[in-house]
Length: 133
Image (tube, rainbow, N blue to C red):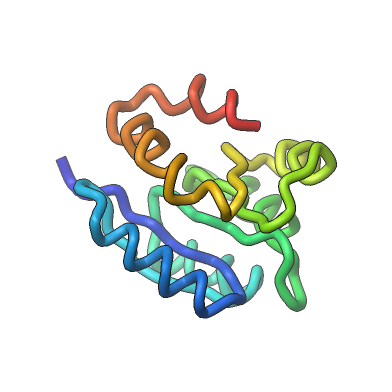
């Protein structure tokens, strides 16, 4: 089975570095690209065709929620997991409305990621991801 291809979209270079470092330790995944804005993320999704996008909510220009709406409107879109520093019911509802497949607080990235990756690699993602919203 080929590696799960991941695109990271976040305007915080420290988070990108930390997430990339962590993801390199997870078997079965490969970080294929980065973007620092929602608009750049849209371009990277088209160019790289990732399986999974980790999308920050708050970024300059186009927000992650707006970018998610555009991504999910494409034919055969990747899975999109919204990441945020501010876990709140309002953000969770907005993520679900935008079409996100899941929601994760950045503070829980390291603890929730292994189960998420396992779910995606084993093909039962639809039910498990929707429970995260």
